[in-house]
Image 1: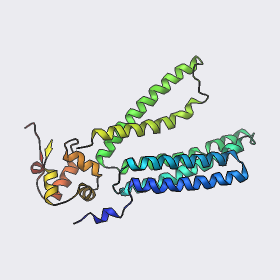
Image 2 (image 1 turned 135 degrees about the vertical axis):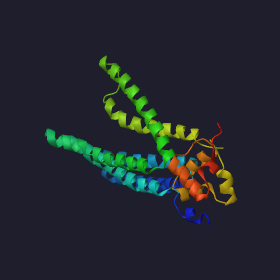
Image 3 (image 1 turned 45 degrees about the vertical axis):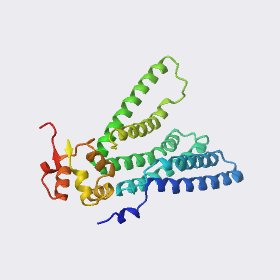
Image 4 (image 1 turned 120 degrees about the vertical axis):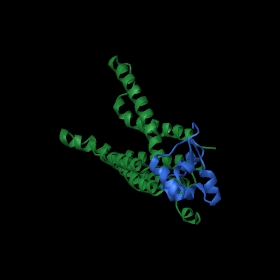
Length: 197
Length: 65
């Protein structure tokens, strides 16, 4: 028996390197298009792609060089198109809002970006359910830490808002990114606990 | 809980990654079991015992006994 079957598969590091380069290349292409059309949403999309690509390239040496498991590759196949759809829908919808006055249509447009985020969450849930028992335990610990931390901060923010001392216009918008961010950080911390010598 | 996983894996010249693939778990899970950072569930312990063709009590040792 050998490990040869493992060597042909993609690792997280290789994925981040290839995806990072692709994101930077597409981002630069989009910025080139912006020079021709001068649309703000095109500029934001290009900048986001370049920044995401650079972050992935910087992070890639610190990620695992082991082959990704089937469920991780399937997660990426589900997660990446959903995130791309989110940015495309978000940046297409925002410029339209100024020109739409009918409340039902405005509500429909503004809720459209929630649909791909629903698919992102579906991908995350499917990864969680397909993970092995230790991964599920680590994810449960990370989600618990993130939920408690974000709930506590939301609660504090709500108190500050009641006395008009919260300098954020729409604090609810921050709950989801705060959950994702603290979950990621908590998972990295929890993983260290189970790492052997 | 102590176990003989590392020793048995070394005898067969298997890498942690290969054993992880056989068990359909992550390499980190195999590593955590080997180093005693994580005690596997009964179903996973049975899968390990079957793979190494031995009884669970010959693979795992409850140090409190």
